[in-house]
Length: 406
View 1 (cartoon, rainbow, N blue to C red):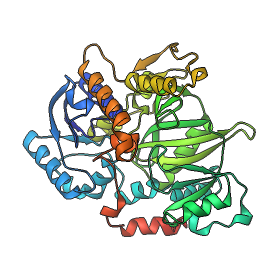
View 2: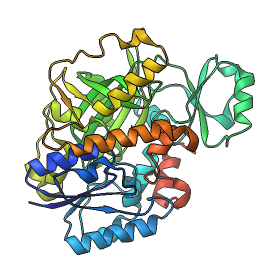
View 3: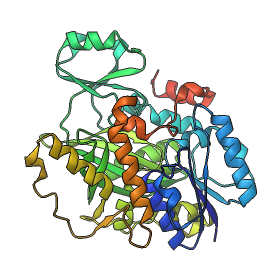
């Protein structure tokens, strides 16, 4: 049995990790930068902690975690969200104190940059949308509409479809042209993955599709089903091998049915909502994470079941209300039907309090969020990685130069 600390406990997949680790016999601790965090209130948490903001107060955050590790003899830390980057940045401070299954900071920061991912895809011959930095955009080489997005973001934050050069110029005058990129507009059929890699080998990869998302126009998946897409598995394995990558690796692809092609659009080198989708499909990623740190030889490759998945009941309710209030009644067809093999990744009759904590957090982000920059922005308060607070490493600069992502 290990003592495991799960951070950013507000995420449903952090809550899932807490429950699955408890079932595996581990003693689980939880932490977050806010009190309205579902995982903190799980009955399976031995003790919870509130830490400083992970980016703006990164040194204070790390020192706080180190104190928790020392005081409670924590063996293993599982970062729940973008604190993954912060832990990687300060990874040397945990040597001999607590274990984390992470690649070095340079690889994580490289993959967080969507422009870097597009250049890596070019080298590996993985299909990706036509992409240029906004500073390099030439009107004569493009056909509108196009997509403009930040190089580094999460969810659908900052992504806009642009119909004309006039609109693009107007937006371009208000943003940093080095930090935004223009991409080819592709069909909206998206496939996501959650996988686990160890020393350059992809041990398991679960491909799933978000049937619904919250906010309704794009964000967290609320209802997800697993699919068998060998091409995507191969593409993810190529990235893992190329970068000699270790840890959680999650990706997004857009599918063009006319060309029968999957285009990579994003890589998230951290945990994602696919954790419980994977569990429904027979893959226990939190247990695998711990086992790789304690006894890596014992861990075998696992193939997921197809046609099963998970749903997030508080977010499903949020989706339903949002669609209802917007009068998009046709979208409600089939909402109350559940596919076989579906698991609720928040509601558990044996552990009910986190459900209400997450519902309260969702309600807060829906009501107060628009006043503080948006629903997703309010939900993410205190847990985001912001690179301006961290120095670029020499290793990161080498990766960017190697793949011409500068």
